[in-house]
Length: 222
Image (tube, rainbow, N blue to C red; front, side, top):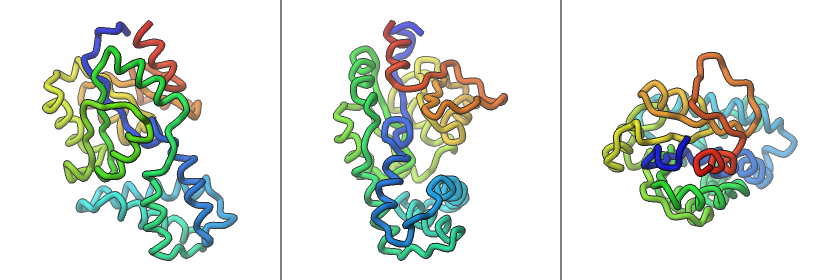
């Protein structure tokens, strides 16, 4: 992976740049109805509900996140008031970046254009980017496109707005479902940031697999 191979690096944000699990855990602590719940189960159940909601007509991500939280909490017999679920969704703007995110992006940004392709709302993403403290050349959100990954709208729009062929773009993400699989299917080069040290499924073949962004920067810059 040479320093000049790619003209731009595109990233998913939440789970890749922003610590999604820590954010969910801290936000959940503020909701009385979730006290003592199985957080890992809540995360798994919420993800499945979110996929179902995103497959339907477009709704702002704040609504999707709030409703998926309420539905997944019900599986454990917890009733989360709507106002608590909405506050949970708004808390995304405060969720912290991973410690390696800022330093790695500053290194990568010295040689590459940087972009984020995210399923959230634009205002929330801008607040998260401010927390990261790195300037991006392009931010694309579900609100912009009225479409959610893994649909192709984010990927098609990124190539148009970056004015680059897909061969000159590397897409970097944690999520196999939302990012690595669909980008690979479209012929993009992908890097899987395997932060949880998961076993790679046999049907997934990213060009690069790294444990964190610091390792990606090392490979990209030599």
